Structure formats: structure tokens, C-alpha cells
Image (tube, rainbow, N blue to C red):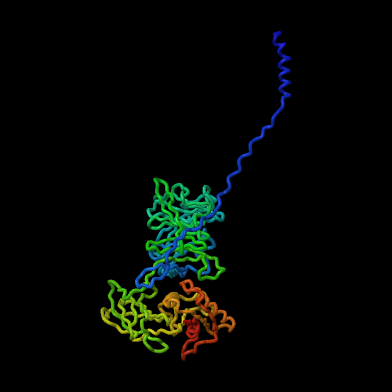
Length: 544
């Protein structure tokens, strides 16, 4: 016990000494700064060009890039997705992310139109679509299915792919039906929207994962998959001619996963210095894409139009109509001014409203032609040459004339001037009725788009001989002189825009307006409505 008391002063001393030792402040190391966000940038696109030069050899196919009539208005047309039965979904709206699908009919590769109101409802098809559900915040979209029936699209309100407060859209199904590839800005994306994929079995969707190899710090959007399994998508983040470019990639299946490899820019003329989105390639290599490029449009337009790259074939002599009862149609082509035969004029036969050539030939030294054409169905015969405009008529040869020679009494008349009788309503310049008018103001079986197409082909056939094409717009007598001068000019500009879309250089097109100053004489007993229809016209003259 005595020893313990002797230790007490020592313990007190040690304690006091410890309290007086210096204290050192603890300084925590600052955390490292977060890595900078990835930069959205692209490399210059390598040179890759599809030749669109028209060959001089007859029968040789060649590539053509043009706007799609019916999908290239002043509104936003973001894409064209062909579906079976000759139809397609045209995506329109304020934004490519929430564009709504409309059903259109594909008349040919470069023309579509809305189906008639009495379109049969028996043709039912299922497709994948982007859905913006009711009650969701702006930008929160989902992937769903839709049913096409007749001219309507019914979207299923239940969703296949939907992450809360994320945009999921632009779905595409692989040819084997095993995978859905889509675009999304959900958590886990490298930047903006990325391409994702999810397994698809018996109508149910598995866990979504990023599509390795396809994504960059920029947007990757609008995927589609060709029938051969090639992935197409748009992005400004790989290589670019400017803005969003279309790229292709090989899709590789590895067990329960999917990845993209061999990313390549598809090149020009599909891509340009503008934005290109919503690529879609059909089995025959017809390639649709939406673009903001100016080519043939006003410089201040920035809306999307649908364009198509497809193959045409230069005309070959006497293309036969196979396995269809035929007759031989003979006739002549004359110059309407000199009343003399037109030698070496091109004469072709087509079905009305079709671009497919059934037969073609050229006139002999007497201006005569011979064509094998089908019987018992309407056939459109068109003649043209380099210096004059074209002329056409529609005829139906009776079945009783099968394997016989039928003479067309009325010759085809080619003239240095051409009257384009687009059926414009009285005060309208940009929404004509579908069919052209004849010289009596009666609707023909040919559309005004067909007339424009033939005008483009006629001028191009001159191979640079036409220095200028002068177009003059005429109106009827309704409204004031001043307003009709403006209306005539607007109608001319509408036609000029369509000619440029078809491939004519704007520099050779000169527009004028006569308003109501050159009204046609009214015929005896002619109704005022018919007379006014004849007066509303656009006259064209070649300057060579």
C-alpha cells in the first residue's frame, strides 16, 4: 500500500506532461477532381463516293439521288420506313424524337402519297414505334408496338422498353427477330443518346445493355437493320462530312450479347455537309434517308426532307413485256410547228402512274415508231427529243387485237413550247390537285408529278444543249391584277422547286409571271369553271 502512494505523484506528472505536448492538426487530402466529360467530336469522313453519273450506253443501270415526292414539303419529314404491301411509314412532327408515323403508299422509289379514305382495312401489319405516353414529362419516351390497318396507325399504349425519366426510342428489330436495337439517353450512356439493345423473345423484352462498339460521346440515333443484318445509324461522333452522318456496322452475336464492329461512314451522296438521319435500306438497295441539305431548295430552309438513292436504267431498245398478251402499236411523231416528221425521237410505253418502262424505241427517217404493248389495259405512250418538249397519250388496245398491228391515227406532236396544265385551285400555288389537265381543262390519267418527271428527263436528255428553261405562270381572272401577278410567280416557283428536286440545276431555270394578262379565249358554250381551269397554267420555252 505504501508503494502505491509513492507512485501517485509520478502518474500526476506524466499526465500533466502529456497535456502540455503540442497538438498537430489533421489535414485531409483533397479528393481528385472528377474526370472531364467526354468531348463530342468527329474525324473527317474518308473519301467514299457512290457514282451517280448517268451512262451513255443504253440499258446500263446507274444510281440516282433525289427527293421523294410527297415526303419533301415545307414541313418536317424525318424519315420513311417501308413496310410490306407497298406502303411506308412517314415520320412527321416537330422533333425527330417524337415524330408521329403516317401511312403512305409507295408509288415508286421516289414518290409516295397518302392512301385514299376508302383504303381497305384488311391489310394488318405490326411494327415497332416510339411512344410518348400520356402524362409523361417532355422527353420521356418509350418503345411500343403499333398496328397498321388501311391508312391508320394504332399505337399500343402498353410499352416494351421504358426507363423512367429517360428517352427510349427509334426501335429496330434484327432480321432473326432476336434483338431490338434502340436509342436512349438513359443512365450509362457515354453522352447524349447511345445505341442500346435488348433480347426479344415471344413478345417480351430482356435487360437492355449499351451496344458496344457503336457509341461515342456524341448522339447515336435512328438505328435500322437491313435484311442482311447490317446496322445503319446516324451520329456526328465517328466520322462526318458535317453534322449527323449515316454509318454502317456489322452486328456480331456472342452468346447472349450483341456488339457492333467495323463502323464505316456510308459516304456520299447519302451523306452531305448537312444532317442525315433515319437511314433505311431495302432489299433492292433502295436507300432512304432524311436530310437538311439545301440542294435545290431555298438557302434558309432547315427542315428535313426524305431523299432516296436508287438505281435507274437507261432505256434499251424494244424492252419486251413478258407473259402478257400484246399487240404492235404503230404511229408517227411530228413537229407541231413545221408539221414535219421528227427523226430519232425516243418513244416509250408505260403503265399510267408507273415509272417502269414496258417498251421503248426510236423513230425512223419518216418519224414512225413500232412498239409491242399489252392489250386490254391502259398504256401511256410518250415521245420526246433533245430539242423539243414531250407529248403523250393513253390508249387501251382491245383484246381482239392481240398479236396484230394497230395504227395510232393521231400523231404525237412535239413542240418548242410546252404548257404544263397543273390543276391548281383558283388561289392556291403549292397544293395542286393530283392529276394534270388536257387542253380542254379535263383531268387526265397522268399526275402532274409525272409531267414534272418527264420534263426533267426531257431536259437532261439534251446533255447541256438547253441554256435556259423559261417558265411563265398564268392565272385565271379571279382577284386583282396585283395579287394574280404574285400568284403566277408563286406557281412558277413551286414548279421550279420540283424540277430542281428532280435534278435540274436552278441556274438554267428562269421564272416569270403573266398573272391574268394573257387569258385564253373562252370557247363557245364553255363553262366558266372549265375556262378558268384552262387559264391556270405554266408555259415553258427552251432556249438553246
